[in-house]
Image 1 (cartoon, helix red, strand yellow):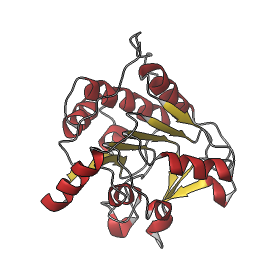
Image 2 (cartoon, one colour):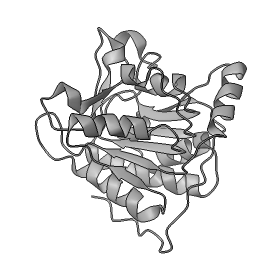
Image 3 (cartoon, one colour):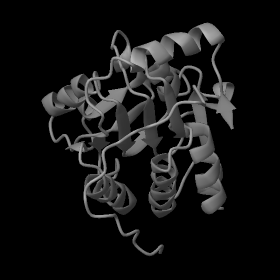
Length: 231
């Protein structure tokens, strides 16, 4: 499933990405949920991306200041991956957010409204978590949610989910998605291949917003990543 903007918007997004300063990926990690439990799948995603890409910059904020620093780091990154707990606010979709710091602190959340006025240059933003591309029942396409906030800030494309997903299944999906991207296919084709490989409700929940023709060229580390067995 893909939501494609107008041709004018596509031209704007493609021009913005040409100015990306760092290939990335910038990995923003929130490794605990709001109940304080560890997100094992998110930890697997972070380990996978750190081991696979030479340009991976991993940030795991532990304070409000560190969350703001992670937000600032999004500017200039060629690719952004967010592995964390997501939450939607149906009454105010601009408060849709991702938990990056300690639970029970409002400053630990990076929200859609925080992206207003930012100048992202990412070819792709991957929002790996429950409902990360949705803004509530009245807006299932996420037109006012985090995915669209990323596009409005300049990202060329965004991949997220429209509903609940299982932690471990997301980690498996992420491995398939980046494996396809590394083979040189478009984001739309990579999404289709990953959904085909992870035939679960979690895999089916992933959708694309933005430019379906976007591609990534992320510098790989010397040793190939050995995909861990699925659980």
